Image (spheres, rainbow, N blue to C red):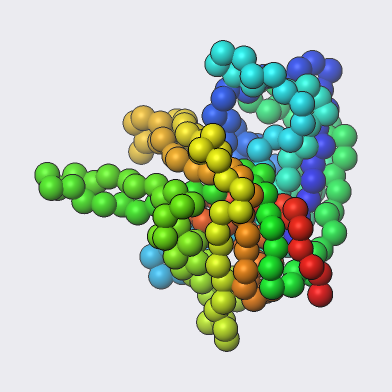
Length: 257
């Protein structure tokens, strides 16, 4: 399930260059059901040692100016939010409609419309474009015992393997069963060096003393695999950190069943 939220404002909307944490907080605050909100924020859906929040979202879509330290968006702007759990989006829509005026960071915005996007009947191949950058990584131990996070490029073999394994775990966590045939591949279709994005996830908390630097990629990709797996990746996002605003995608070209 996927919704498109259109935001308007009487003034331009100014946000820092890395605004993922602002959109994430914006979504959490407007999930109306307090039990569901707390579950998603604190725990999510657990599979083995992993916790999945089962939602993802796009960057803000619309016209903007890139200033020195921030983006200046020219309303209206759109935000795509996607989840395989219908109850998440239903509670979010109810929360949005409860308020006439909403704060997005320091900007006063209004909901112009919320639309349910039509379901796509995927076949076994699709060309997609990232609406928010996709990221996968490994945590490595250095010789001195300290840990280092390594983010994979779409041109490395591990990129496909790790996205595939991540999607397998999401499938089992969501459906509580193993897939009969796990056939899924992702490969770069039109990805340029400038599609690499460095995101500063600046969430202030007691457990996080400094911002997290995340490397991720925009661009066009080719997906091949079972239609139900492509559908799941569409609903919950590709790769890691989906609920932080990574891995949301849309279709450029696909044959529908």
